[in-house]
Image (cartoon, rainbow, N blue to C red):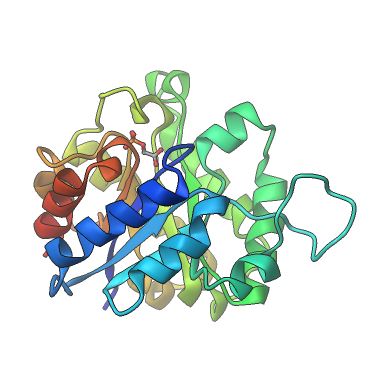
Length: 251
Ligand code: PGA
C-alpha cells in the first residue's frame, strides 16, 4: 500500500555549513525509523552538502523547485538534469509561496512536474485553497480543479513518482492548522479526484501529505487520519528534535 512520507521544506533557511551540522545531528536520531520515508527539501546551494551528509542514512534529499526547460536562457533557474547530477531524489513543485510570490500557475506547475518526472525525480506536488475559498465553501472544487490541472497529461504509470501535498494556504507558517477532520476530508477529495482521473488503484496507492503548521504536538492526530499519508513540514523541520518527533509519530 501507499508509503507514509515525512518531508521537511526548509524554504530559504540554512547555509551549507548549517546543513551539514543539521544532518549529522539528525541522522542518529531517526536511524531505524523505517515505517516512513524521510526527506529534506533544501535550498539549491545546500543540496550537494546534504546529499553527502545523508549518505548511508535513511534521509533522502530534495530540492524546493525546478524549471521546466531542459536548458537555455532562463537566468537564475535550475534544470531537472542539474538536480539529478548532484544526487537530488525529490523536488517540491507548486508550493503556495511560489504561486503567491513568484507568479507560478497550474500551467507552469504542470510543466515543471513533467520535466521533473522525465528526468527521474520524485515530485512533491503542492496544492490547497486560500482562506477566502474555505470561508466561501469552495475548498473541494478548488482542490479538485488544481489536482486536474496540475496533473494534465501525466500518466497513471508516472503517478508512482508523485506525492501530493495538500497545503491549505491559510495554515502555512501561520500556526493555524487544519483540524484532523478538515485535513482528512480534503485529502479525501484529492483522492477521489485521482480516482476520477486514474481509477481507484492509483488513487489508493498515491501518498497524500498534509502541510500547514504540522508540528511535534499535532502530528500524531493528523497522521492518524486515513487519508493523510504524511506531512510536508516547514517551520518544525528546522529543529532536529521537532522533526524527529514528527518522524516518530509517523512510525
Ligand atoms: P509550515 O510550512 O509547516 O511552516 O506551516 C509548511 C510548508 O510550507 O510546506
